[in-house]
Length: 345
Ligand code: NAD
Image (tube, rainbow, N blue to C red):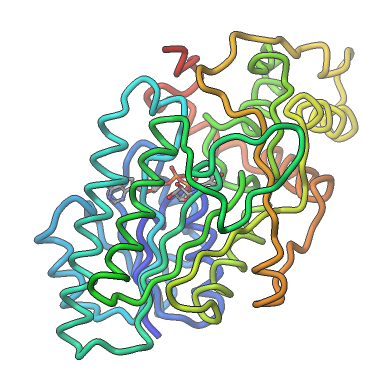
């Protein structure tokens, strides 16, 4: 089986590529190598005979046509996207271009390929999306696959739009698709502008640890390697034309998450005063969703999938990974916008 994975040089995409290659699948990684990409994430598979990399942009219809013709994939896993909410507040245009228009071009290229092959039933277009499309919850409740879409940020609106395009290509043209909507990921190779790496790296540098608002926003944290496993499970066993929510079963308030990371660092890399002393509350993100929570019933009952580790275990692994991989994150800290406060509108 040949998989065309878009965005495979990013955080989640690279975890999917590493896992799929290790399971013997043929993987073609298509990535434009934006500021968020890092080919070092793929060092473990770079020389594998069942892995290849194509430098291309999903907004380039001609390039996509050629890639489908050359590689004849049996499935597409679409992860390429602009993914940082704060950047979407400062510059929404790039999110519309890549997440909406780019997804449209990819769908058209996939459709032409699938029709050219005689519309095989086994073909799959798997769109990797986010639980943020459902908007914000209050103190109780969970998102199911039937929760109405109500995105609040330019990022989540662009992902909701792309979900709708995928569904429409399925309904109108019959393109076999699955959509997954997952909660916040964390783990190794997480780009240093996102919350968990920011906390770890600011703490290690003795810099203030910024927490938006009062830190009361709740997220359901999903370890990235569990997510990659869930994605391959849905790709291979999920029902065509269906959405699956993927959660970590690990809800935490941001402030509790940050304190947990500080406590792990206090143990693994002690300093004279506790890391928690560096926590600073800063102006909140505009439109900041209060709470996301995933009802995992469908993926659990239909596909038998559950996350394998707790938040405490995952954070411990993640902190250790950052302690052991300083050259990786140091190289990324000089990239445009990293280390500055974005998205205050
Ligand atoms: P990321 O920002 O780390 O990686 C995105 C990758 O896409 C990068 O390698 C980048 O170069 C590539 N890319 C961007 N624009 C492109 C274009 N026009 N053409 C080709 N490649 C392009 O993102 P991530 O955190 O790994 O997220 C991957 C996917 O999962 C995204 O679709 C995102 O919306 C979704 N998602 C992420 C999370 C999360 O917590 N990170 C949660 C839910 C859903």
